[in-house]
Length: 184
Image (cartoon, rainbow, N blue to C red; front, top):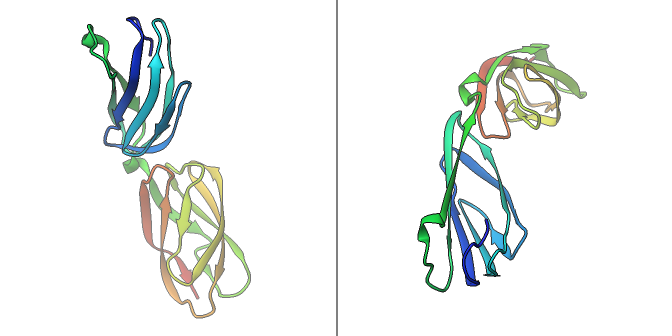
């Protein structure tokens, strides 16, 4: 943003993040900002011609169009309030509905030593987590591709039976498959 008027003391920016996003971080070239569902920045005094850049990082949780708007105010009257709000529209491709778990390989395992299970499906993202329910400890997950996650697991000696395997992407989208893996 750039101040095109006279010196402006007490400048602040407010941005209520749109639904369908999760706040990750905020940075500014002037003043300080705090973030969450609403990002608030106190920029202090902006001189005539002075500028500041605020960078907000979010993770989209839905596909489609997301519009974000931010507004600026100051502690003195502004003769031109028409330029105190800015909006940007972004199209998010893909969707949580494209995330699916189709199978596990191998489909069975026994309690004891660590083993690797490939969880197969679609829409997996780097950083996804995998759960096999109680008494199966997932020690690590390796992103191999958008259709293959390698889960390193250790099965508790008291675990038995079929397991629902759930994948959770970093954007919060989840998908599960009942009886994908069975403890023998």
